[in-house]
Length: 101
Image (cartoon, rainbow, N blue to C red; front, side, top):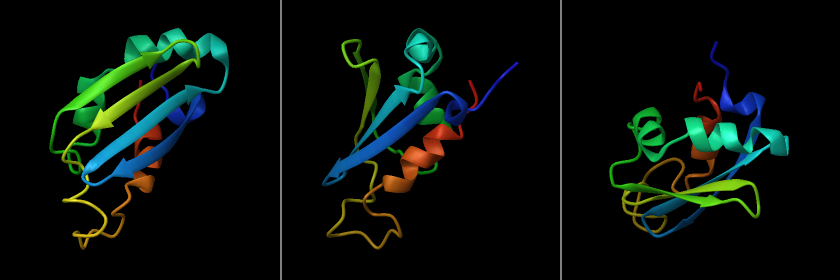
């Protein structure tokens, strides 16, 4: 049985130029290992393929019970040079939470 990430996690986003950073935190610490197992860089790239065009690197931060995804070439060239509606990529953190695991 699958569930949405939003059922067990929350996310934040940040950006610098054309690089987007998505963080993922479990709502309950017991779900951190499930996130590590199920939310790979490849699955994030597939889920957000319409927006994320470059490589994605996943960083595990067990001290914070967090995953961090560095997404290159993700913001249509960046805030100051793009006509994208969400040049900052904030809504992509919500789109990530729609991913089924």
